[in-house]
Length: 259
Figure (cartoon, rainbow, N blue to C red):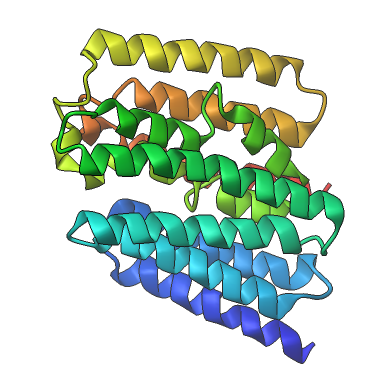
């Protein structure tokens, strides 16, 4: 029983972020982390220290991503969240060949997004489309949804954390942290709409054909985030729908964990 008290660390950190943080996404991430830390104290029977450390690391990563004034700090937060996700996917259910393989798949696919991120950052504006690819990889949009669906092997609280505001949401949130993206990403409003709506349509079909509740939620996440991608040229329209999606998806995964 005493080991569960370690989950107070991410719980209190999450409450603090919700109360005192400024960006809306960080506030949402704090409240969701606090709720999941409390939920995990009753859902899991062991590995509380691992969970507390990785939940805290993920929240720190989101904080660094949201608050850093420069591109290096934003990228560092992006990477911290990926490391926390790798640990949670691979270890929350217990170390096994399957969990490690799925965690490795998610980690390596997201490193592909890093390649495009860095290419755009160092191209000096000559390769702006790399930001789009990086965001699509991180958010698990089609054609990169396969890693997101595989990650559903993780327990319900982990899925709730990663699929709400602490991993996939960062991809769509990117233009709010990178003002140079606006107007120089290489696509028109119609281009973004075609890309977002096309990806959303394929993901919606995947949700319709899914045979498991968690798979359906994974595909629906990709669908929702693809629709938000269509709004990239007007990034101020992204934040509030993204936060609503975060709370809704976290609640759905946690409810599914009670079944």
